[in-house]
Image (cartoon, rainbow, N blue to C red; front, side, top):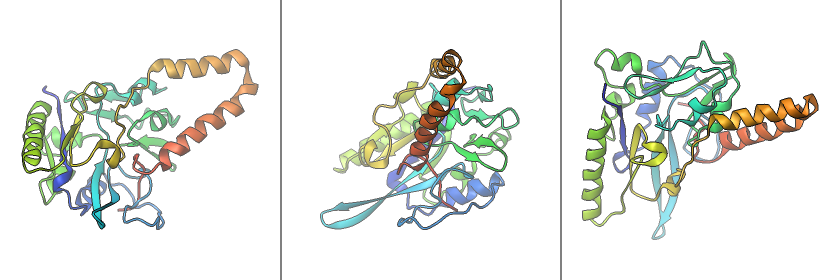
Length: 261
């Protein structure tokens, strides 16, 4: 099967969050407690959500401008989450989408920490990680993912990755011909992302890493090896380091955590 994915054209996104609501409804995700953070973006983290819309406030020529970006699993070719999963709960579907088997997940949170896009949340009630799985149940029955189906502006498109990439290049050329800034994100990053963005500002403006690097299984192996080598007394300080890293990732603005739908 040809690799499939989603193209998100931020220049067409109005921040309506229809994709966010549709995703929650289709996947039967419960409402999550949240709080006002001084931004329209909500919820604050990806816990309890598979996608959300990030709100970025910028000032151009003295005028406030809102930028929007749909946050979801990028279905990386070089998927860090797969590399560090201690239980082997993360695999790749026939169409290239990366999925988590929540029945196999042991809740180690390695994937949450390793994801360079902050796109994986953690469900405290079930003790498992969760993320976009490309609506495999819909796709296998000839339907498009819920987010793409519901988008009113055509900012989200589902299809074969090569076709999406060609469409992205055409769109970038149109925007640049009109004198606007435009970039493709996802063509080569991490071996090529399953989900691609058309951006109208540099990736950093949208909270995307300019040069993401994959985590590897050796990272997990080295970490476990250190614990075995130095004994149980090392557990506490190392756990504090990893916990702090996780908290930094889950609360870092623009890198994937979730607010409420």
